Length: 52
Image 1 (cartoon, rainbow, N blue to C red):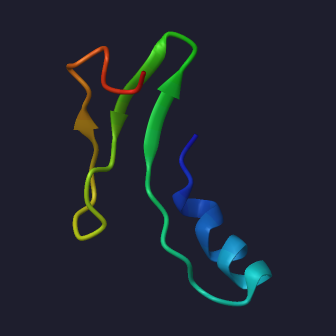
Image 2 (image 1 turned 180 degrees about the horizontal axis):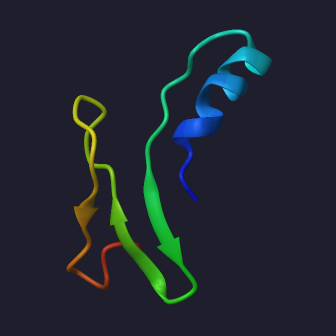
């Protein structure tokens, strides 16, 4: 699910902006994750043992 449309409402309900990191989980495992807060986009997880 795309979080971007809901981000403003979340920050509004909390009362301030917070750091967020995007991930792409699935029942099969994590496919990708955001590896830096400075840039948008996801890094493809090619190492299947990374999250164990």
